[in-house]
Length: 321
Image (cartoon, rainbow, N blue to C red; front, top):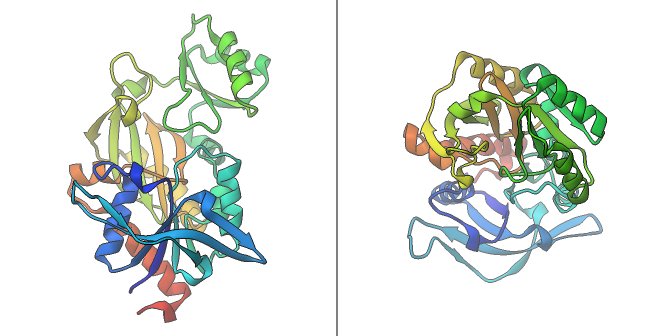
């Protein structure tokens, strides 16, 4: 199967060949002889129901001096492609949401991964609330009195922006911390949306686990351990990656959410688990492939492409060539 594939993502110049999951997806696509195009979300256009993008053909390689090469810019009709991968990083703002609306015009005839409608309806910190029994005690609110009551009840809490990403704006507020009111004032100035308040899970000191699911099936995990004096386990803020398998509780969590992910066209998903609780479901631009591959000797990107090709073959058998 040879497919025409567009990567809707951030600038290629930002690619880190040793860390980016998107790089691995592109590398595997080239191995399979798929034709690749790159465009920025702001290069999308919609006119008379036709979605186009100002894009460039590109390739990637493990050549450290030149991890990618690009061709001349051209305007491509996304309806003529087989697959579009939404791989731009959050924030999940109106620009991100608008891109999902535009891609909805070509999906599913052109397979968009993940399904743009479902991505739009599945912000990481909101989608997870549909599985409340798997979450720690959580409050989403702008109401100061409700937030203070939640802190009085749970004492030790985490406060974070509803549409934040990468650990930005995440605060650990202990029982005796006098900064909560000032923090809420700051959040009110910075964000129009409610904030997320969760009971602090001390198990985070042992790690915040990222689990990758393909078509609703758990295929690998990595444990991210916070640095000393840090409440966040994100790797780019100093978290340490550790090899990890899945506990029986984590398998139960994946089994509970897997059918919904698969039915919603969420092919490639990353969930975050602390202790016995799931805290986020990441559907926008999940990461963790390279770290898991190194520890487990796997090739998760191959499994993702197997799933994508199977969906294309099922929907459009004549496109197999």
